[in-house]
Amino acid sequence: MTVHVVGHSNPDTDSVTSAISFAALLQAQGQDAQPCMQCGADGLNPETKVVLERFGLPTPAEISDAAGKQLALVDFSDLAQGPANLGEAEVVAVVDHHKIGDVTTNSPILFRAEPVGCTGTVLNKMYKEAGVAIPQNVAGGMLAAILSDTVNFKSPTCTAEDKAAVADLKGVAGVTDTDELFMDMLKAKSAVAGVPAKDLLFRDYKDFDMKGNKVGIGQLELATIDQVADVRADLIAAMEAVKAEGRHSVLLMLTDVVKEGTDLVVLSDDPALIEGAFSGKLENSSMWIDGMMSRKKQTVPNLQNAFGC
Image (cartoon, rainbow, N blue to C red; front, top):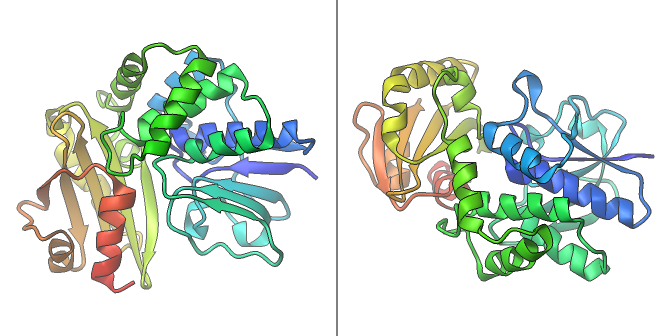
């Protein structure tokens, strides 16, 4: 039976390239595995398109319904972030770098989650441990994912292991200038001109269960916050529409990579709770948080504490 290797919904570069690289590792070990993604009508985000084109990686097959399939999950372990009917699939493996989610299994599986900045870093270790050489194009995708997830080592999620993995992978991928690669990715990631506001909101978006409350968190990494000045009202309108679908709160992190901080835009049933989570004060539905770069390490944990998770 084919193992469908898939990352989270609204996939980022790590989610897509990890599906490709883990499927390649499984194939090298004699398993029938297929990289997949769950993108919907909007397809890949601009950064991931640049990465796949640069390294000649094929676009994974799309998957929308998991029922009856064997799945290996990469870059997530939350039911809410998986394809439809994930509970009716057989999950056979998880490789991740986030908090442990609510996916459960009936039998023991390979479950590997490490406190590093990127799933690509974990997979780099797994290739080494298996004694399997990483194909050049796959190494390029893994390298790009680590640079993206760690914001070129600026994110507080970045570890010495991520930097070591980049040093390994750049040689295999034939990349001499990782700063140049990161800037090409950032140009694509931060492009907003002509993009509908809802697409921008969902470019890098995840839903979380906070003690029975559905909370959505999106993030746009930008060279400067001014890039979204003209579409700010449209972004808030898109957030209002998404919140009206039954969410307690919707947050959008407008992250300035150069200034290394985030303009956090918030729509919530309980704004005071969000303010308390970040020790700030909302003005016109937003607040600047200096040093905030990571949803995983700086946004989600604060909210979980505030909600009493």
